[in-house]
Amino acid sequence: MSSSFDQIIVGEEWEETDISILETLDHVLNSGLVIAGEITISVADIDLIFIGLNVLISSVEAAQETLRKRHLEIKAE
Amino acid sequence: MKLYAYCLVEDLDTLDAPVRGISGAAVRLIKMDELGILVSDSESDAVPVTHENALTHAAVVRSVLDRTTPLPFRFGTLVTEQQLSSYISARKPALLTKLAHVRGAVEMSVKIIWQLPTENGEEQPITQSAGATFLAEKRREILGDERRSAQASTISAWLRETVTSLVRDEQVKVRPAEKLVLSAAHLVERTIIPKYRETMAAARQARPDLRFLWSGPWPPYSFANIELEFKTQFGVS
View 1 (tube, helix red, strand yellow):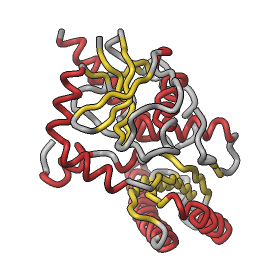
View 2 (cartoon, rainbow over the protein chains, first blue to last red):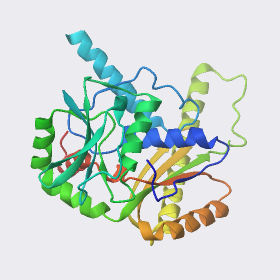
View 3 (cartoon, each protein chain N blue to C red):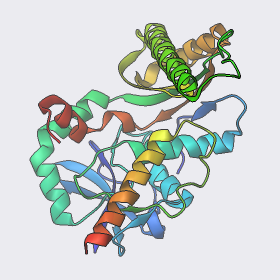
View 4 (tube, one colour):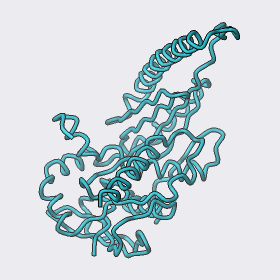
């Protein structure tokens, strides 16, 4: 899946691979069109690479909120 | 059987090459109401958030970026064909407006981290009562919050001024926590990406006190949130 665009990531102190994954997750988890009620994710390994990087706070928050809601739904069933 | 939806596109009738999506399923382009949607079949009712799945979602959306500017769906969008069709029909005007807004552009991402300097002369006396210690701590918190908010506004305004002539639209989030994190998404015309990069490189040089992370081009994830805008505009949730 190539693109004519060269995707460039410029950061400081971090490994580019980590940043690339971090940035990708930040985009795909935090934004995009939402069909209400149809986001269905499981977050078993959401804590994978973000700890300490501080720039994916909203992703982690969003994942934790999703997890909390799922727990509540399971309890209610 | 559900469909995993990756992105919405216009002016595309075929995919350039075979593309594999979540769980290795073949990605196909379907048409609904004259709009194209990249989807793959899914046997499951949930999509695990894993490296592989997230990167696959991003790769599928990116696979059409050199031919058109897609509107990405958020990761984990699993729908029936009927649900997807209803969504497209009900929101077609808004979706067309969004597609027109991002046409010919891409998203560039900037994150800025700034460490609040420690204050001098505010060390608390060792022999302070518990109440006084609490109040001193609260005072430090409030002063810190005020300084962080003020700094966030300053940095945000500086960044806006730096790129204002180069961006069609922007989304900025500021998180003034222990370290200030400013996250900006800029919608930039494809033809001026080199100029944008030059400008950001110069900005980075000009502000050694800030830590920068900038990346792109991305599909315009940050400019595709119709639901959020509806809530904001009409004050409902």
